[in-house]
Image 1 (spheres, rainbow, N blue to C red):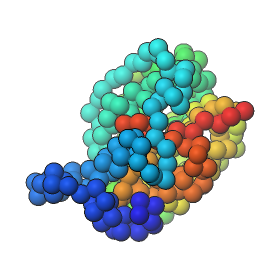
Image 2: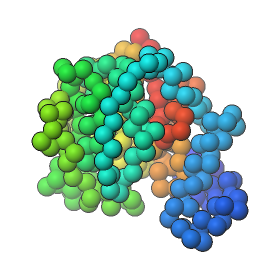
Image 3: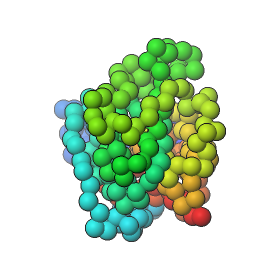
Length: 262
């Protein structure tokens, strides 16, 4: 039921599929937190070897180059989008191990992941990050539903990069990813990070564009993968477009991983 298009059905199915006494207690005390717990249960079930629509693997198996890699992490208050250290660490390790010359990020928000890319890539790397222009966030093309609409209002693209030496490696691009002209970047990105709008149509378009952007043997990452409820469309869109035996959830994260073979 995780891949149904109906959000309510996903949430109800997720509750009943993963329910236990602790989840019931959490619903009584912190309903908002309880709504995200079924996704964590299910990802842990997949990691343990349970049957699921995708495969979960530790990062060192997906990218052996991470063995012995060192990362720089700066832990910052992230506001409405918490970024766990496990996910920051995975992003940093991939950046340090891959040593990409070019990165394209769809969805800047406040620039936390762009900063992590910048801290862990060679000095001559370029990081392109795309977000809606501040003056155009109410344009019909930028329409969004649910939590996405709230995030658009709270976004301050590049906030964590301003005044930073690392920010000089980051190029802020403006536009709606569903209509942006990606042609100058096609086939030239060593790493693509998809973290824009979370509805099915947007994720499907962003995924299609990411596959065009990525270079031979480049890597595509998706954030908010493997979740019930609000962001369940991410998982469904990725697994609809991508071969399921080529997309992997990085263990202990909400990040999906794909490496293009030359």
